[in-house]
Length: 165
Image (tube, rainbow, N blue to C red; front, side, top):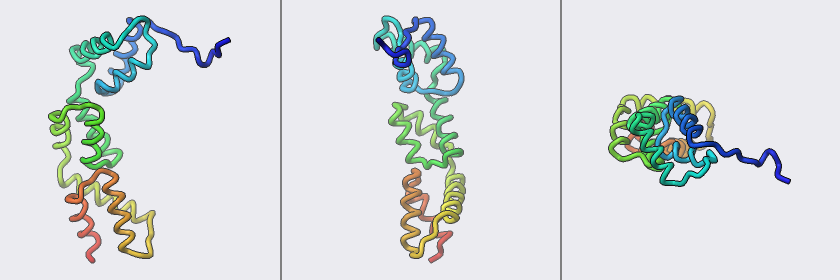
């Protein structure tokens, strides 16, 4: 006997199209996210070619727009999550966004904004981390900022401005 909790209900193609259009209308999504979502649906008699056709139709209907997605992704990850350009670019590449869209979206992050964000991150980090050895503290902070996706070219001028020793 099958458990009712593990049963997966199959849906028709029309139901899947309605659901995926709603999904795309709620927030920006890229092709890979939509593809993953479509595979999660248990659609009667559908194969990978049909899924690719659905995705192409969604692009033609402007439900999926990778440039728009990249712009929204950059804005959210930089302003809300405080990610640096490197981490944003790597993540977008992993999602299959083309280099032209990525470059166009990332160029909206100015050097001034980047430095301001770094100053805020350093200030917050300093409030919660206290090291007896200042050199170790600076190294930990540097690793933290590189992990957030900032380049050394962006980090070092800000660090040198704050830690004038």
